[in-house]
Image (cartoon, rainbow, N blue to C red; front, side, top):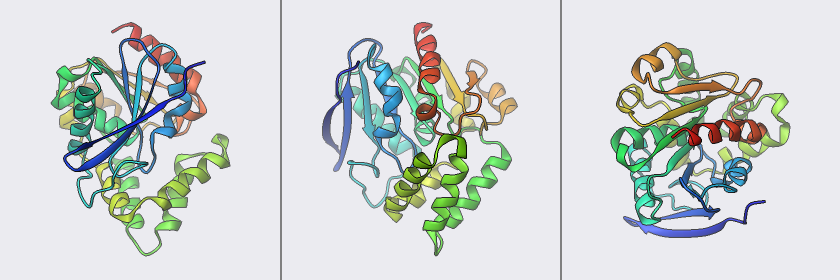
Length: 260
């Protein structure tokens, strides 16, 4: 059993960032959560990984206990925050693990600061999107900024959390979307639509993409842009694969890290 996580916080350029840390062992792991969530959405997986690694899981700016400034919700800004945390917390060259939006942020960090990390693990991340996935997300971007964002939140959560993954998880995600400040929720969701093709082409660190049963990435384009990336899928899992299949995800992570 891993030790309980310890909270920490520090201010970067006027924005207070919070994180939780647990475990020991190299390489360290920096874990980035998804849209409208916080570090706790990665908890089942991090509990397993912290038995062998030092694990740091921040609340991204705008979410959880971290500050929510009026602007700054772009992949590049979050990637800069991650690079700052790596240096401040002396993580060495960590493996960066990111779920959903956190994966896209990790890809931006790998593309722009390759020397800062040893490897990259993406959990059902919105990178090199298929056109139908981009259209699907763009439709919700408009709805979430409309007159009835609460209904849009429930519909989006239902699409991300299939019935087999449980009503409790779907309701928790819906509540998190509704609770997120509007000035964060909309711009952060639009960040999911960022063109990540150029970032994928610049990624030269060892990388693993763990897909859900319904992958978002265009396989042919992704392989052409980033031929060194390994791709596996968790059969039957929805978007929150780290919560519904943490043992299987942890096995893929352990195998990948052992090969670095």
